[in-house]
Image 1 (cartoon, rainbow, N blue to C red):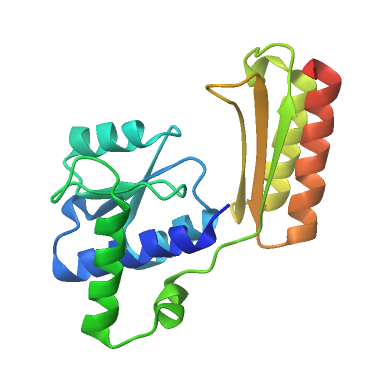
Image 2: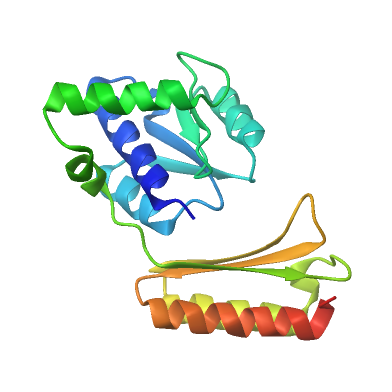
Length: 194
């Protein structure tokens, strides 16, 4: 994944809040955005609204709630007061403006948040039954969530465009995250693997 883009999202949200331009005191991001973003926004008192993957879902949520900023870590950052779609040039200009205004290097500005280890495993599947209907997989997910105890998260979802299941686990301890991701992935393969 691209942790720098998540840091850009955090930076822009924090500076927009300071300037009073972060409508609804909220940032809209997808379910794939790093858990470190969630921690940083919570600590700053900014609400984080997660949507399905895809910038169209981000924009729909922004419009529905009247929010001004959102994006996904693929790089589609949407500043709804300036444009209706993700715009890399606009995002770059926003970051450059912050750097110039504050007289800071990008490496310093990027320290507004710390991404947590994130493991993503993509698995080919033969069909896509609801994850909740797969007891072995659901059990592995529950065990991981209990051990992470709110200091990480588990996301198991099907691709919207491919016959794949995506297993994502995040948390402070990379070895623990990897172990849980692999256990869940093994369970998916044994249950519905292609």
